[in-house]
Image 1 (cartoon, rainbow, N blue to C red):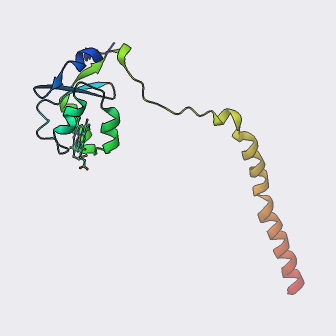
Image 2 (image 1 turned 45 degrees about the vertical axis):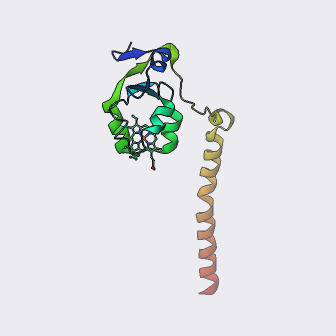
Amino acid sequence: MSSEKQFTRNEVSRRNNKSDLLIIIDNRVYDLTKFQDDHPGGHEVFLQVAGQEASEMFHDVGHSLDAKELMVKYCLGEVVAADRIEPETPQRSWSETDPPTTLSSDSGSAAWHLPVVLGVLATLLYYLLF
Ligand code: HEM
């Protein structure tokens, strides 16, 4: 259990105006009431997402590392476990369908044939020509 302050999405949704403005990014709750007038992207965007989930919009903008460091200052806590949205992680099981062991042992044994054959050919040519 985290020691951070916990918020339900319902609680956050009620704090959705210019004088009390919370948003949710990646299951963390930010109080942007004091930051809205300093936000380089303007305060209107915050009013659009006030009290709501804003992860997609935040990431779509491609905020800089500076912006991500600044966020920490405005973080109040996190969303309660029951209300969390897990980020989508693509699950690929290629390792099960395409075991790499067969491929690497095959190409491993073939790999030293070529230089040996070339070496033999070069030696034959040397004796034939000189
Ligand atoms: C804690 C939350 C946020 C912080 C600390 C923050 C901070 C910043 C900073 C520092 C910039 C300047 C550019 C950069 O350094 O990336 C910026 C730009 C911007 N932000 Fe945010 N931002 C936050 C949330 C949001 C959200 C939720 C939205 C959209 C709903 C948003 C939309 C924008 C836009 C549209 C720009 C302008 C991008 C441009 O002109 O290229 N920001 N923000």
